[in-house]
Length: 415
View 1: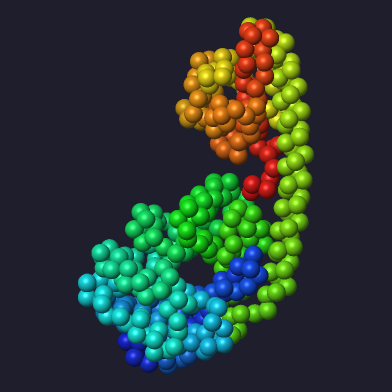
View 2: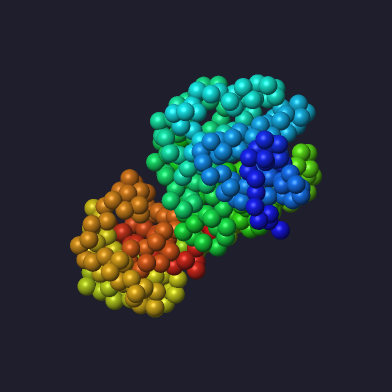
């Protein structure tokens, strides 16, 4: 039960703060690589624990907010110091209230002096900055530059939550991007969430920073994220926050089980994908052979027959070798999104596809190409497009058959 009234000054003066740690786990390394410090207050009178939202909600001015932030920081580093002496490989990850970083506080070196006093190596400390809480951007950048020069790592926290300031990424140039639980929860069931995660993973790989998924609560979420390039995880599935060494439970069995499941999933996925692409090849070859013998005026009729025969084929259309559409787009009417016709409409005869992902590889010399899943502009559905060159005897030229295959036939490993 939460205390009705808190004397925040008494809590600050008596340092009535308890630090819990939550592990950050690398599945590929099969190890705990970091601990995030999470502060809990406790009422000096009753000893009742005070959740962080209530604790920090009691700070009514910048001075008390800064004082509380520094107490939490101090208690976290002091608690971590004993762990650091035993294992120099584990990182301390702790949040800094960015609203406390301003013209008055920058240059205080409070954190640097604290780390030195407790004997913790700066290279073992990750400073987490919540995107939305910065009020003085110039002071924040001075803070980041100062601590980065002294070998601290910088993380952006809560990325992907609410009104995230994504412009901070190029400004702060973080070493770690922490994806918020709002983006992670149910990611294995939501294509749009997964695509956002993939975008962050791809971007982070190019920027040379690490993606950490927080709020992971199920093995399915962990498996999905691992399959899409995320390696470091934090959440109740692995461990709940706990004080001291209790925060590093024996997770070997759980991590080994996930690693084995990941290997099995990947093996199954590759085998399924191989079968799927083999079926794609046979289907496309069958359609191309038929169209090769079909007079130009009969292309649309033949493709309509294909749509009726093969339920996984959502749309068909033919391009010339310049990427111009030389047929209508024939679609399965049951697959079209009637409610979004102003957004999604099948391309018409003469449309230019020369910059499309499924055309450029053909132009570069490939005979066939299969795209990754994407939302089709023709139907508004998740599909993959297969393009295949064939020689059309009637016109005496090479053409390209393009087939949008519906989601049902796409390997579910993408989710």
